[in-house]
Length: 358
Image (tube, rainbow, N blue to C red; front, side, top):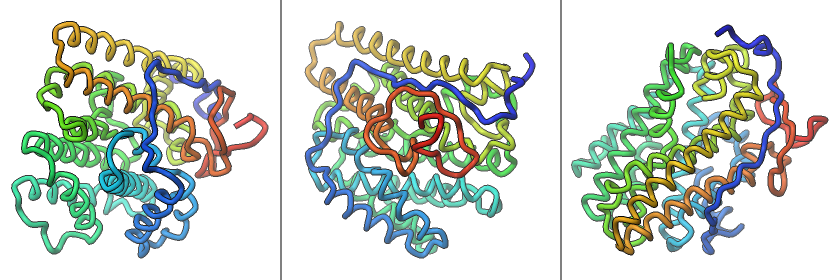
């Protein structure tokens, strides 16, 4: 199929609010004071980076830890602090990696290689290489605090998923350097790659530890959990496209995203790609519910039911955060996103206002 004739124009499409039937909850430990304190710590870690001053407003406005507070609404404050630091550090590193692709191609992916090796050494109780960057050592200190109270099976599974996340970023590094997507990447291949790249498998691995329940349900619910991950990263794809578009607008073939696969490779319109992405989210929800129900019909285990309930808090919380955070709707954005027409911007930050109603 030929490429879309509208590919050279700024994408304009109707962006709906996606709903799901699961209840979201917010951790009561999260408030403005919590946000400020963790923000201050995260910003101190990156204080020597040349662009640190440009991030202060964005990091404070993005409210990263609200996402964490909705993913894990029932953990105590010390755990929420550790998981919030972990999430923010990896998110900022990913942002740095993407934005450096045009300026510092030689270092693309280097931090992820260093981190993967440090995580591997932690998994065999080896010390962190003293020559590793201070940022890597800081992340490992946080990770060590997270995994020390875990049982060995949960700990090993968590560290394995973290290594897979690092590896997925290394796979992206040459693609970002060359500004081209892997040739012939299908939507099915994309789903497999993104399952590791988005990182929610790390959080799912930790749920049994958070709830002090039998961790064997991670395996028994494997297919349902995969659909849950799909729901979460596809929601991110839907609402983050405007944020990511400016970096790739001159070469959309280099943007590893379901919408560009559909538009660039399959000739669909932007609106048709958005509509299909929404349907993919709903199909992921249906797949999760089907496999969850099949398991729960076979067992009366309260642990399995609690695991599913916690996973549904993650699904609902992830969606809720994407409707609330200025990270996806512009620094001037306030309140909760409502369905509307949007037009992607050529600037580095989506506008919250404007004639298109963004």
